Image (cartoon, rainbow, N blue to C red; front, side, top):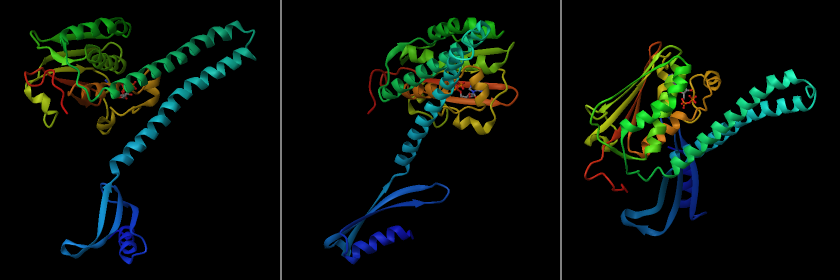
Length: 313
Ligand code: ADP
């Protein structure tokens, strides 16, 4: 029924062209973009066929192109904002405020914070691209989750203390090691605990539990069926409205942009978590009740005789 495709077929069967390509958008609930190429056959073949119509589904390719373009636009915008602030202050200090020590004392900390923000953003962008490049190869070093959580607890302790947040870490005894990259697994927990502290609110408790998964999460990675270590990070913050949950791991997606920025967020933390877990053949689940808090649950498959050290195609 597509006029474009019918035209391609007509052109080829009419003999004016031997091959004709059109691009078609099929609207509907699931929009599809197709490339259709019609070609005439030099002589009829089986069942009197006189032509060939080849359909290529370009939907996924186009979606990736769009995502790439959006990503570059977002990253540039995120860098441009602190840069504009810095440039503004530098110009002021060079010009009207050149002899004003008070202004200098006020501006320098802001300039320092803006430079730190750019540097965090660049660090996160670089980590993300490093992880993505290696995503196909599953890391196989033995990772002791209890040890990694202890490392993360020490790293965030001061920050938690300053925010008046109690960290309650409960790790089950005798957890098996999981195959992975210890630094990346630490980054997953660090990002999630950092968020729980950031969005948890002063005076609240952040609870981290680690255990064997009682049952594999439904419809998840097949690797998790042979057993998984499950780590949950729960905060008592405002929670996340339901409609945002599916998009939280997208790069630069934030529920409240201004709030995230004022807390020093880059909008990349959960994207990094997702990519590391994909590389580890693990999974992330997010549950949240508005006004009550959020729980981020990480599943990491345990080593199995068949799974350890082998690469999937
Ligand atoms: P950010 O640097 O903005 O924190 P993330 O990728 O880590 O970026 O998180 C994306 C968004 O998800 C955050 O901006 C915030 O809106 C939401 N979010 C993440 N963790 C929590 C949490 N524990 N409680 C409430 N909202 C959260």
